[in-house]
Length: 323
Image (cartoon, rainbow, N blue to C red; front, side, top):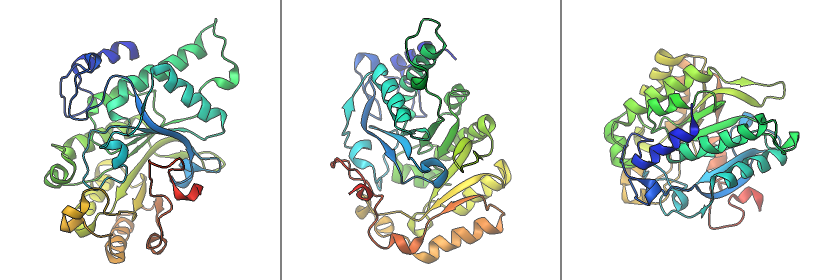
């Protein structure tokens, strides 16, 4: 895939299902409000992801600003909807990836990458071009060799995801909803279920089941995240049926209990509390009943205490576990 050619999609932006058709290269803004140049909040060795992603030395996490979902409960709202971050260029992004690798990170973890796909591909192609060039002056230990993790809320266009084949080693999408009505109400997305499921089927076609190296670090594959919302808003049992019968019972899952009523959630009574232990266990039991046993769960009792992994992008140390 010609990353330079695909970059021109920004002139008539259709990188996600919103298909705003604005010219981002000339400064026009669509649903996500993102400009042409990448904007990131931070880049760090993150130790709060799933064990095979964080590993011993951390996941090389790049937190992108802006998002194509407007979740009323978003824990990253400071960057996704208040747009805190710093504008960089394509070469800067490549350099950040290489720096995270040099610092020993196990992977490059792209958080909320959807609206930045053309810029990311151009950045990755730049690194690969340097690596393949006979005239390049980059040292061998500066070549990007670690896996790329595509960490997304799941509102994707499967046709665009298909273009990522060969660029992405690990897909880590959310399946947030099994109902378009809830998706539109709480995340301002239309036809979420259709786009989300078709995209995940394509992701699975590309990378298959999650594969770990001898040290338990993920090197390739699909890892689906399921955030349990209060009052069964996400209808996760229907999502688990989809995974079982349209993907495979071998798929790795991360079933999360960490929901916290952040940002605008208090305005919605049904979202204004943390989940009950019974709500979480009901999902775990159903997954086990379906034979979906690969993956990770969270210790519900520990989340009743202070959540060390809840971000605050106003601070230098985003997560309290760094303090």
